[in-house]
Length: 242
Image (cartoon, rainbow, N blue to C red):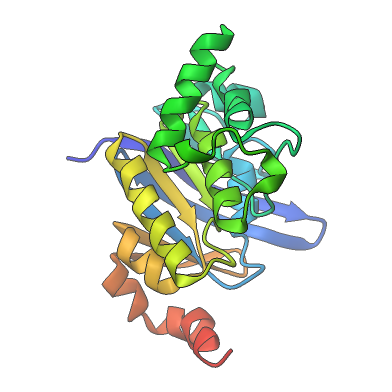
C-alpha cells in the first residue's frame, strides 16, 4: 500500500463572492508525480498558495506527513518539507546561479561551505552545474525556470510543488525539464505539478487531478483523464480549438 504524504480535505477558498477553490480533496502518495490541470482561472495556483501557507483556506483541512498544517505559516511549512516554485521567476539578478541556490540551502545548512556544497549538488541534479558562476540575469527562460526549481529543491523538500515550469519553453526545453522532473522524483522527492503542456503532463504523471472553476471535475490515471467527457468539454476541447 502506498504511503500518503499529503491529504487535502474539502478545502474551500473564497474572495468575497468569488469561490476560487470549491470543496477540493486530493491525496498525494510518496514517490508519485501528480499532475494538476485545468483552464486558466480554475484555482490551481490558489490551491498551491494554500498548500504552501501563502494563503489560508476558509474551510477544510490539509495534512502533511500526518500533521495538520492548515494554519501553519509559510516558513513552518517550508521547514517541514514542502517546497514550491512560482509562475513568474524572480531571481536575485546580481547573484550567481550558485548563490541563488545557496539562498535555499541556508534553511538547513547554516555554514557557508555546507550551503555551497549542497547547492552544487542540487545544480548537478538539475543539469546546471556548468552555469554556476553565471549571474541570475544572464540566463535564458529554460535555465531561469530550472534555477527556480533548484532554489526550491535546496530547501530539502519531501514534496515539491511545481507551478508551470514548462510554460513558454520550446519542445527541446520541455523535453529537458521533463527529464529533470523525473530525476528529481528518482532522487526521493514527491512532486505535485501544475502544467498546461498536455503531452508532457500526460507522460510525467502517475495520476492527474482536474480543476475547473474551482471544483475538482476529474481524477485518475492519465489515460482515464484525457478521455473523460467533462475534461474534454471544459479543458481539452477548448485547447484543441485555441
